[in-house]
Picture 1 (cartoon, rainbow, N blue to C red):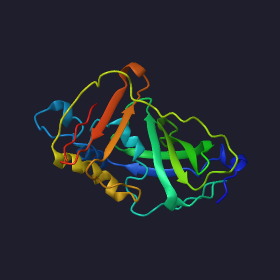
Picture 2 (cartoon, rainbow, N blue to C red):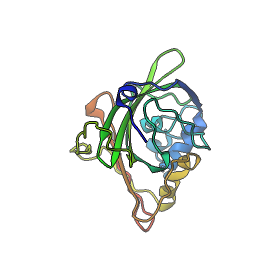
Picture 3 (cartoon, rainbow, N blue to C red):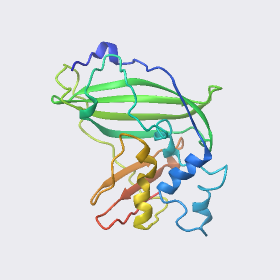
Picture 4 (cartoon, one colour):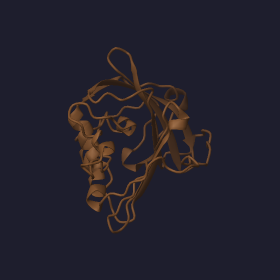
Length: 230
């Protein structure tokens, strides 16, 4: 299926409005293992009624948190087979604390499309603002579309991003039950992946001040153990 670079690059999708509550935040945090020690104030601040402190990574799932069916997509200049699309990367940056409840308006545009020969890598950027126009967060993500290459575009870089070259700010071991709970917020989303032995994922959050960057890593081993690093 064809990709038209002239039409796709810079194209914007229609604004999408969504909302979230403190209950959604608590569920997301529980899925990440927050509150495994009920006597630890550092953990309980993520579960406080009505006003939990929000991990910035919630911005990556907020828009699709309540979706139970695949979204209808119409990408200008990008006609691809969604069954062959793989998630490649995702990042979020926040200028300030994410509200524990609220409404966001998301505007997505396509910033880069790379021709890998047998596949295409499609980059998009989503800006999420409050109804009054205040910037809440910005997402960047890429997808790997198998069988969609060969359209004559630039190949793009071959390197991938690496975590910060420093020790994590905080390291915590949680039980395998909590590790399995990491999938709870995702079961509502059609693109979620089930936990399985040997599954590994890694991400890091860059705050507006690079010196305060937070590194998060989950390694789920065959025995169900999980070691997040924050």
